[in-house]
Image (cartoon, rainbow, N blue to C red; front, side, top):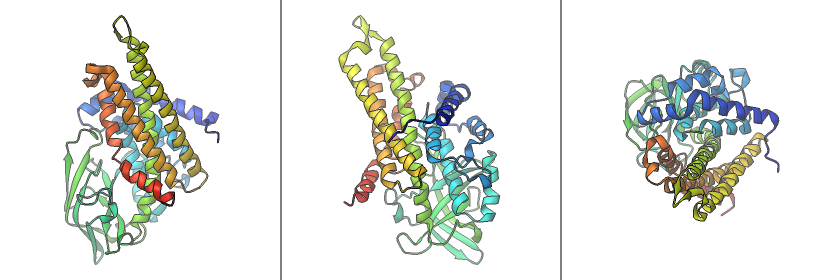
Length: 378
């Protein structure tokens, strides 16, 4: 198959990369990473361009872009940081879930403020005893008259603490493993919600949290879709999430490899540039091969999705391979830069930290391989 971009797609990519260089850049990225601050300026600029609505249908105010255009977007916004990309993509997934599964009232209440940059979304799936085994969650939602009452503990809920954020929260409504799970919209300032930010080595800009729910009440209409269908809705969300993550790994790995190449050409040891040493040039050549392969897997999955075909195996293949490649490239970059790799102003330590998180976040590599094996009939 031919995965070369059309002229429209090439123009889209060029515009996005120009935006990242002019409106974001390395210095701004380093600052919000070091200060653990959300890149609000970037979020607002992306909203102003209408790009938050890439996955939202046109009749609801969005752009209704296809998965290939979305993958190009995710690859570009991860140019300098996977965390910067997550600051944008995390909200987009839940907005899409509301657009496709929410009630008319939910769409009216939440989508326009989001498209205008006045609302953010977070997704809460994991719990202390339900990480890779997401269906093992124990947080409960009990209907009491016209309100749902929540009690439980969620963890690694990225961006849940940010002002104006609504959390898409998975909770148990019956004992059935999958059909006993429902999806709710929970304002992060609702009474009974205690959100604590975690001091992780990544997610410095977006931030990730632990949430404690104690007799938290929301209106009965805050459920997304039907009772017991939350697992189905979230799995629809995960197909796009894994595509976006794989694309972002490719985008950031491209920058990491380019930085390594540039450094090894400029740095001299033993009277010649590092790039002239066979061990380094072969390592970078191998990384180039792997990066191109990862990118092809991303656009294979995106193309299949764009044709309306099921791509569960393809997005998992793209995610697991791109995550491994991004980590390998960042690891090799750390080796090539030596002591300078430890300095934030060289960016490589950020690529390295964030690439390692990519092997776990959004579904660990081990889980992706299990999904691929299942799709193979194993």
